[in-house]
Length: 245
Image (cartoon, rainbow, N blue to C red; front, side, top):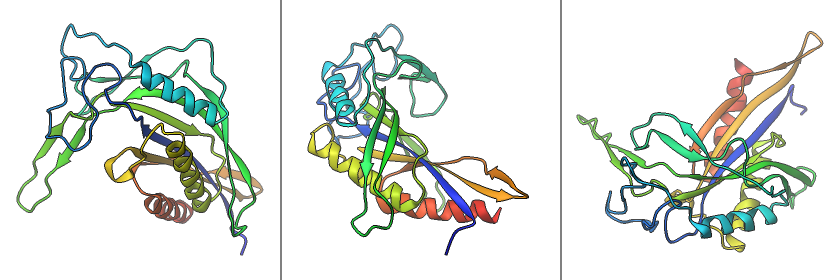
């Protein structure tokens, strides 16, 4: 049955790079250490501390950019992304906005059951940034404590942002599976989603016709999903919710 709307989906994929140390300091990125044992004045943002770039993180990012058919500029730079969150000790994130280290690529996806045609999903940009820390919320009855673990703060992330070229939750899941396979094969990340090495934000809205006019619903971002099934279910739910509204 033909749907009375078109689903528009773009994905932001945050990939932790397979480096031994953090993006701007020598602290370990090993998963599973005791809370707040892998920190230093740089990654917790103490006054007077200065960041030093991790060469290996940039090399892994370049490998990914080539694998995703991206253009790599001759010049790139860092920006400060200012926002407050308890697990962001500096009060800003060192990221890339104006001049990312790669852009304008694509990843081809297909379906063995021919549920959609083979297509290229355009990559808007793949840029480097540092990860934030982790908030741990105690939801046991009668308690409402939140604890902060800064071990992850400063871990190198590559954020891969697609254009809104996907038209179903199935296409989104296929894109993520293909991307994970590629990243694992070239060795830039272990992509262990259960450990947070690959996390997904989905941007979803609908286009529909009404009174001979195309109406676009507001874009909704579904954040921090760490399984393919969760992404697929969340998109399906959000599509139906937006159409009901």
